[in-house]
Image (tube, rainbow, N blue to C red):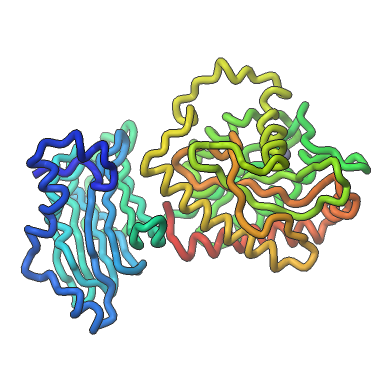
Length: 408
Ligand SMILES: [Zn+2]
């Protein structure tokens, strides 16, 4: 039984043999197990229902997507000897049997399913090798239902040592959410400069450090900075630092500039689909300025060939990242709106082609905290308690997002 890809991608379906195609499109439903319950039962019991399960093999991970009627709690349990991953979906009944995702996958040997307790659907992935699991919920979007996404990430250079005392029922320790904070500019590149000489690179670093401190104080969170002092870091380096730390979220801090001193307020940006330019001229100019950091620092963009950040590949991972970035951005904006000393420039999360947001596998957000060219906002950005309030809002938005959606 082979399901190599998700049914969402028309191209992939076209590549399949008729038999594979039939399996992908119909097989799951046709091979329903005996414990599958009709929708009417789920509605009556106010339970969530699995409506589809898909599997997708990527070069470095295997992704399983549970389509749901609504988002639900889940629990991951990792077992060793043999290596297994158990996924429990709470308050759920099966509309399709997850065990029926027949597969030919480099890491999953077999899939089983069952009901350990009424209202819990358990799916057990028997694995050929040890993996690092990650799961996250996606809300309904663009005609897609709420989903639980489960990634089985293959480890590079796995440890060959075998424990003498194998842990048989070890629940995966809940790992910390890693938030990479990126203070814009630095060193030779001051960024925007206010009328009183305040430099964007300095205020960005000050707020970033405050934010890192607050995030590190939160249980289950860990902050990392892309730069810790006044030195130049290329945009690509910032992204690769975040990837090195396996960031769950990336947030880049900046301060805006505009020819009119009256321009004011904070705004939150995410990457546009395909990195396409914003229709807004002022945003295009902002992107141009922010993206020119590498030129100022002497990095020749033509000779950079980091495959991890090269181009924009709109694969499933990136679409998820963009969906999550939008929700994360909304959380941050919502928190910023609640700070009395913060003006809001754009009431919604804006999309634009910022180079530093182009990592395909982590939700990335850029915050313009205020306009340095506005005298009042320049003064505010230098103010300790205002910086602290900004950091508080960003930390709180981050916490709310992770708590609501889980780790990516
Ligand atoms: Zn900037």
